[in-house]
Image (cartoon, rainbow, N blue to C red; front, side, top):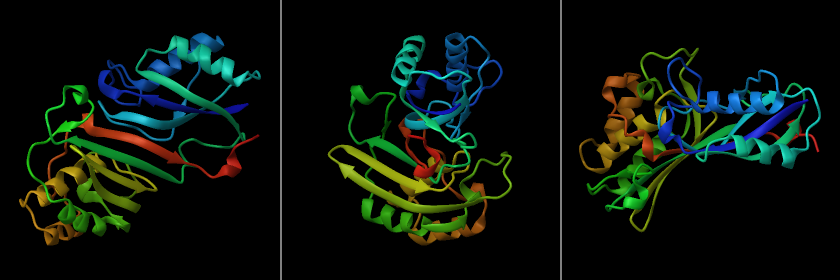
Length: 248
């Protein structure tokens, strides 16, 4: 039986999602806990990869478990085995061919900035004290909408077949001393959101003009874009799937 697990985690202590040698990752910790609970070696497939230090409010992974499980009981027992910065939010049965990675229709990220010194947000948001124009950044962000080649915002060394992504939302909002950038797309490239945010902040502070942003996209050149902002302000907040893959 195939199951979808909804997971949330604080990424501070992990070198990202994907298992790698000589580094602790979220995937490795979860697989070890599942292997202990089930009694056989268990591997999982995530809806995507988050980089080192990036947080997650909603991510999904799938795995196959031979025997029927009581969902709430299994969820509780798994959470007991997991560290306090990783939590399983829900478990659902899905069709045997369902894939957490390939069936995802959209993913939403949010980058959070605190405009004042806030010790309660240390490690959970970027402390940014420059004055940035939200209307100007939103004007530039609107140029992201639609399907485009976003190679200019991708890490240079990445194994992908193409750099096309379709962005359906890209918007800045301010709530008190917190500035949030929300972006939704069918897929994201490695480092893409942090590069976009860094470039938009350059525009918001007057370092670049809005017209420069369009030129950067057209260039397909990572060197033309701004620097990546730090990972602690980035959150994967939502992954959407077609309802047809879930079993009642």
